[in-house]
Length: 506
Image (cartoon, rainbow, N blue to C red; front, side, top):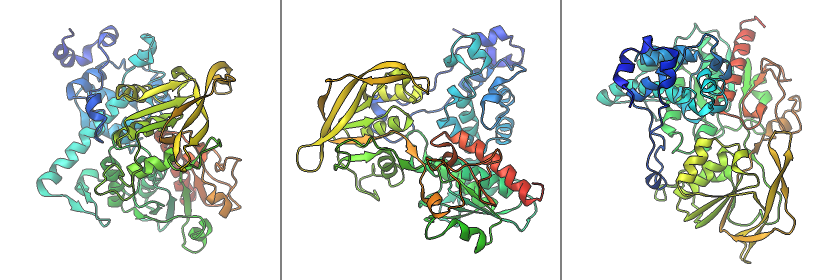
């Protein structure tokens, strides 16, 4: 048993060998049997002792490859060093120099393939699983800061914002804002890219208005990621911080046909526009039976549950489709979210059908493990070729074909090869298609000057400038379905370019 007290008292004197000997701190989680029946957050967060022990594992190497692995280039060794010293305020300040959404990124970003992948400690111990748990430490710092900000509000009462939401005191989240420039910037979409642009552009002194198609700000962080992985209160707080900075939200506003992109510049007088509308057009398999009642895209299914609270049957703003046995098609993070949500919405059995093996699944290993712990069944090397009905127009099951793995394809994963004659019928009353998303073509169709590729992704240069004058773009509408932190990285580049252009420097 390690002497944790001695480690923490002498953290600055630890040798690399002593740091490498400290065990990885496991994330405390709700019991699987309990969490499968509630919408509360699964991962509970590090204790202070755990956070400092995990931070003490960092070798503080001079090359800091973790920084290069971070899409927004957080000074990771510096903030971790402050955590080890229990100086959490300084750690938060360091993170916020580069990342304005640490409580979100610490929860949902795939650090294991980004900042943690090149970690020197992980490479020394020959396992990325043994790398310093950067994401968990980022979450700890962000949650510590949120708690400090919330305590005065709990004692003295929360202030109401002009959107009717309660907010922590303004002094808890003050941000230096330059003198007004008289310039106006429109941000279309309030996902991670849009929120990042809005913050950076507002800090430069420009007026900022965010146009959001849904009734709540946050984009995919609100409608796509479930409450049990990312509490919506955290996203709400980020929107409130922007409001306190002077950013204005126009919700329920769809830019495209009835409010053309041109009009923002030509009629409404915006000097720059950033497009961060995400990739919300779901992909389907184009197999027989996809139009049956009981077939959902993961987008629709998760939006009903997350944005409209279908899980709260007494107060839901949308009906809940009753399911007993659910098939989820796909192997990514969205498939895991949909499967785990179906379980929480009352399904007795949930199966994930995936045409490769677990080794090829693009979903985070942690999400797959959580799903398995909760009782979700995985049928690998299996894929539907038809969805059938019993004659009433509703799903009765799928005709599934078996596969074997062939040679690697362009993604580096072994290609699934169908086995002829292996089709079998499997009974299901609900099918959720979670095969990824494409870009919504609305903006491209209503704005011919906006150049896009064959998937309707907006084409941009290295500064996120589109083909249309005074219009920038970033996030999933450019990348395709990506991650929160990658979208934020594009947002930071776009904001820097917008600020330079409005200052006459570009």
